Length: 229
Length: 307
Image 1 (spheres, one colour):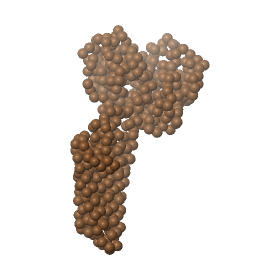
Image 2 (image 1 turned 45 degrees about the horizontal axis):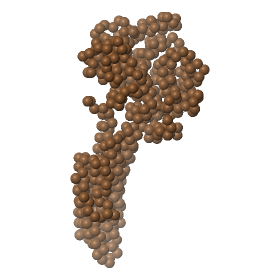
Image 3 (image 1 turned 120 degrees about the horizontal axis):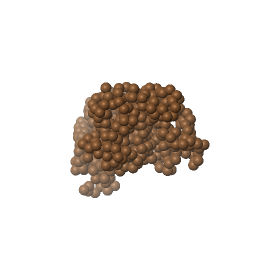
Image 4 (image 1 turned 60 degrees about the vertical axis):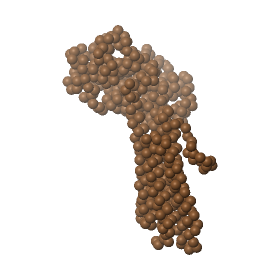
């Protein structure tokens, strides 16, 4: 039987690609953000802040188109779950973009000659590298509708959470110097923002499971820290 | 392919008996003869700009009863305009005024202007039969001529309007029309069989082929899918999406999801109360009507708050 409603199906595919393309934008922002942190590059930080408009623009554009699709095509079953998931994923993308901006905004606070603790800087960059690969995995899991790959995001994110705690311990031990303490505070905010990026990637994984199974369940819930099957 | 001009159908003041004759003669000058000489054989003509249908202060009456009041509306070329609204709101009455079918009801009258690319279809001397081939209609109940073959069904309008076509010209038009209606592959080996032997969806596509065979500018459809199953309905909606590349289309539907899926613009008609005339509440791009309508009445209707 020939396919019907081709235009509608193609539009949905286009919107999915456009939404997931937002993850590429986030990745490029994250890479530049980490570079700005490593080199205390205020100008690069300012560029990242300005470029967040592109992510916000993508959010608005795809969001509106999805609402229109809901209104005009009466999607059901997988199509409906997909559209719901994409609306959530768009929000995750927008938040990840905002976290990059948050990191970039605290870089100038460190001053021109920040008393950098190299161990902490290395920790932050490692966290960042993990977050970047988590985003790539989340995108791939969604594209491939791969629930196992999505669930694995939880374990990968645990690594980031552990590094975040390590960062906190280092910050506490940093010493009495006021400049040093201020610097350590900004590094904690940075670590926290990267940890949030990781959590958003896990949320995307939960949406993959929703699209495929029709069930929504948090992979890992802070109020129930026991095992995640 | 040049569209035919309404004024080419302008006969002089004719006596009732000769009206149809006049229509046939003027149409054959402007119509199929030109068409077949430039038409690619057996292939749907590439997209071309169809005509705008404009209603200005249209009021419709059945005798003394004021059925529809003050409609101002533009039906845009190469787009699908859906007319929605509850039963009795006047949308079908309005549709039938667009190709001069309203006046076929005894005592029915029209006030106001209806213009096809600026030419008034109700002007003195215009032949209503000619109007109805330029502005074709497809009805809710598929109505192929039951004893005629599929071929003759499609060619029916041609036979009536232009006797001077050669067989090969007619064959070309029949094939073009059936292809355009997404029916050719299913019936090409049985063109001589009766039209009544087809499924509901196929019969409706046959009626669409019949309407397009006479090269209209506009296609009016009155609930064309109401008698069809969901799969046949979607097939017709896809077909309408194709047809709008060549024609201007207006479709009355009581199925809001169909209006939402298949149209570019939506016009919402309503009645204030029974006995009052129906009127146009709002017309706009379909995605706006279904996401942020301007009138509360429209919002209430599309979200099902009243029937």
